[in-house]
Amino acid sequence: MDSIKDRLQVFFQEQGISASEFADKIGVQRSSMSHILSERNKPSVDFIQKMIYAYPHMDIAWLLVGSKSGKYEKKIEQTTLFPKDVSFVKPYESLPHISLSEKTSLETTEKKIERIVIFYDDKSFMEYIPEV
Image 1 (spheres, rainbow, N blue to C red):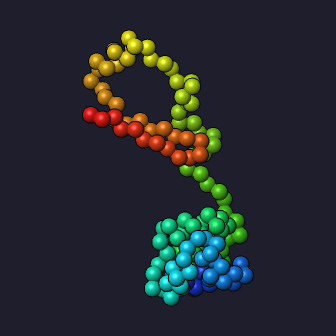
Image 2: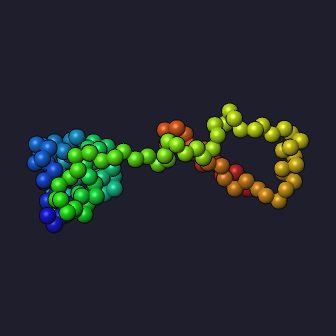
């Protein structure tokens, strides 16, 4: 198998679905699927992300570059951005509070806060950059 088109067609056959059903399930236009299958376009990152969400068992590495076995994996290990056993920061409730006098002494140092990053338990984050 030489192309993504060929591997997608194998996946469709193994799943017993058509290209139209696949497009509907991952939430892309059927014309986008047609362009990929005709090799007019290559799948975008957005397209691949939608495939991963709809078919988490699909081996994306196999789809994109092929594999020695020539088949997709039935199940892949779920990975996350951060391992569950690693704690980078304590929850805000357990952070020490700074009194006004401590704050004043901190402000007199030459160090300035460049940015603050807050990580949430759903693996999203928010970045705060103070105005200068």
